[in-house]
Length: 148
Image 1 (spheres, rainbow, N blue to C red):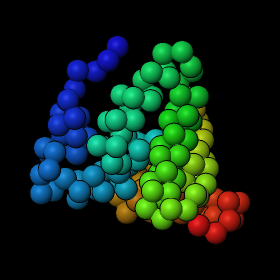
Image 2: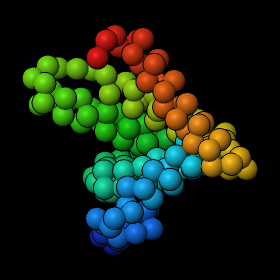
Image 3: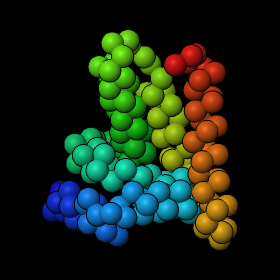
């Protein structure tokens, strides 16, 4: 079933303020970094990008694939689009964001399946955990994929 939410409604639901509001970025950062789990981090992170990925990738895939596979493919496509953006800016092909986002997608899937939650910790501790996951996956990707 396709959501009837417009982009503006979607952003307001995620950020708590309308699209383009002065506190939109602050709210996104506070909600995503302080999320109670890594999947919830991604619920709040970059709602404009998430809106289009959800509508054009995740939902169509989820019609015929298991949710976990649709999530993984959505993360991989997002990473590939980031790699494409680098190609268009630097005129140099890179294959960095695709594996990095794929790895983060695997952590989202595992965290969901294992019901990992650190919501009982203070905001700064939750933010540290979420940033730690991002940095560790970044470092692992850097080691495996080579220099960016």
